[in-house]
Length: 358
Image 1 (tube, rainbow, N blue to C red):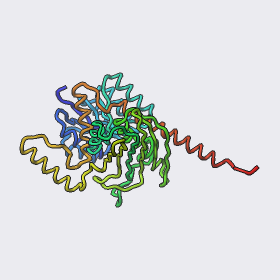
Image 2 (cartoon, rainbow, N blue to C red):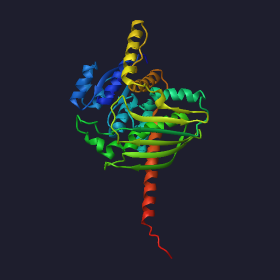
Image 3 (cartoon, rainbow, N blue to C red):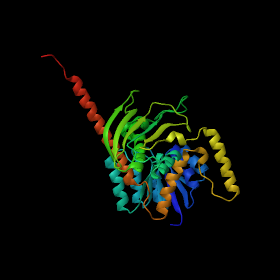
Image 4 (spheres, one colour):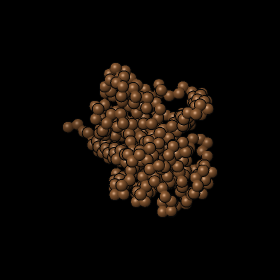
């Protein structure tokens, strides 16, 4: 495949990130985009997309595309991924891969039946500080890791004050999202742990909502791993953040030392962005490839995740973060939900027991 022709299904905020990422990937080009929102289509056109559609099924029917990026809300992932696969497209799906295990299996079945590959946008493993920890861990710098902890907390569906736009209705509908903080953020965290330590087993889970949302805004999960590491996973929708500053960490407690993701973050993002931009100017002047999205720091992760996928399908290889991995993360979330529900039921049953003296 000399050039990967890409169709963008969903040109909202994250779809625009993928569009911009694709422009920096050699051998790939977005040839069409689809979105029901006219302003999103206009934005895609202004960023160089030749043709736009209101309905992604029209795009798939009329365009000759090799790969489709599904950047739609979670309740549309399965429908769009299956349609893309049936159109003969490789599919790159935003997280969470699916709302349920059943949806995820349907997506993988469609891909297998149509001999196409599926990738998932699990970006935290691609963040520069996490990649650095992976390098050090793989080099054996801290030896065996009995304990690890990973967290991601943000403001969920809400804009940081002052709110600039209302919350989309689907974002507050658990049927549309598949869940709350654990589904939205937990799939990323489980993916990182599996990337480092192999197969995961959920051992304990607790979820709660302090803001009267229709789903959980905090979650704590304990997992065991194939490598023998015990890890805690924390996710929440209760803290404002203003990127590039985010709330999250990954900590490895090794027998020889401790690795902390915070130790490998820029000390000052503005200075980091300025320095990185100047480095890119210098590289271009010398005819070298710039470090795409390095000045924006976290957008590097989306760029590398998509590049890995497009490079793989262009070479006829399996993507490194494939649909099977995406489905496993959804399975872990579903197991955690079931375990948390059982824990809550057991706790409530215990509270109903009246203890009396004989």
